[in-house]
Length: 185
Length: 185
DNA sequence: GAGCCGTATGCAACTAGTTGCATAAAGCCC
DNA sequence: GGGCTTTATGCAACTAGTTGCATACGGCTC
Image (cartoon, chains in turn brown, green, yellow, blue):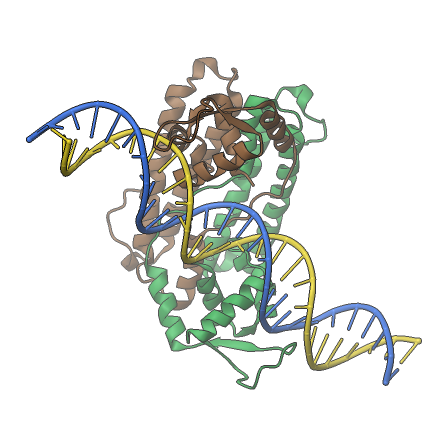
């Protein structure tokens, strides 16, 4: 159960409404724990009901109007508890690898195009991450306050770089008549 | 919907019963698409009902006795269709990165131990993969028939190596009083 | 002031994966 | 042959994530 804890973290960083949270997720926490606004609203409701967060405007129910939340001490305690406790590393679930295995049996038609598409997407994401690193974590204040956030970003960069490299290698190993000539290496 | 296609691939490689499939998953396809026997039985039922596979022993229902399946032409066609069609790369969902972000807000108590635990697990998995590579893909017949399967294994190796490296780096960046001295680098 | 668009909240139904447990046959052991 | 273990199949309930859509306020325009 990670989503409630992701939300508690985001709310501790800055009290927000549901839609604000959704937007902040899209450009930070969501990189490694994506969530739609529907999920977030549902979870905010649960967290409020369980006393982990509360609305800043305790008026009657006003649909369509902004409702901001902040974390209560109970919520912070719960997050601290969860941070320290362990679980197994998440199992890899990657349909693309499944497609390679399937292609080994039924043929590689269309596979190269799919690999190239993924390669382009991973390169684009890598470029985004590197740009974020350049602006948010400049070399002059490495090892500063936010080294944990930087470590998280480095994980994203490393993963995207890994996939880009592996895809390029794998494409090179496909018979050449199965790939287009549009790649640059 | 990847599980049915994973099962079709496995059955094309070798017709099997539900439990045999479960065991084969545990040491090959399951590395990147894990499935329990409950999931597999349920999916075998659906695949049989939809005419993609059939039981080799079309007797009446005998519970507790082995029931082997093979793929029908319809199943092979469906798998070929699926192999070529594309989807977006799967979003990363990694609770460990969430814990780092949370730790940045509520403190790093217990975090180092958690990172060390993951480091050990990833190193062990990496060693397993390298052993499989050594026995199943010896250097003398690289680029052979099974280059696709090898590419899949290389992905697993690369991912585990990445995580091991990133975890070691991240641990080194934690203040030293927050880690035990049991690591070896 | 009617209609439209953007912001915002939220419900309902569905799909996929997980967990716990029930059932049955077959072999072994005493 | 009565009970235990292993092999095997399978149901049911639950949890988490996804998809589609409904509702409501506020400002703008015509």
